[in-house]
Image (cartoon, rainbow, N blue to C red; front, side, top):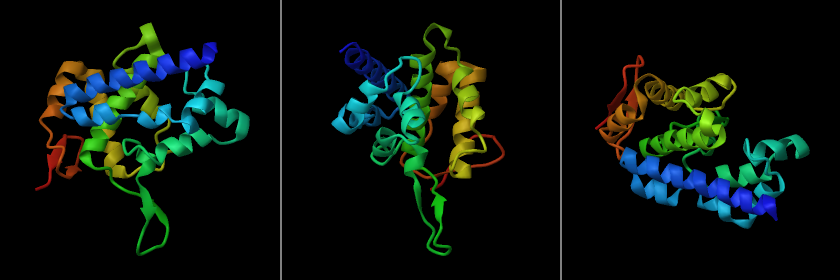
Length: 190
């Protein structure tokens, strides 16, 4: 019973932190819709079973089973995960990583910052999200533009803090596609 309460509290605290960040980023609807699938039986029950409190239950489920059914359910329903954005390339027939639309990229940023805060607790620092991101760089199946844009935002957070980073994000037109070159920032395509 204790795992049920703790898991519910953790995912709810995380979701509320993402909502706050999404409001700061100018995408309030994405925040309100964020991670609702975590409350579905397919994800919630596994989350309770594999709950540890200091990391995602999906990591423990992978250790036990060799895969995480909860994660596969989650990533297939939540567009703020880069893993959602894969498709078959028409020319090659191979699965390829697709560039994320801007609003989901920004939601992913908010999600990563919130997760770092929740799992790091009092040890959180603005350098945590980029450190976590860089640990797996090169092992992800992610579109290069998406990866570069996320890394830019996470570095901005580390170097300039939340206020300046969220002010920058609010100026991005989330309804338009972006290009990203030379680490200089977002250029919105018309």
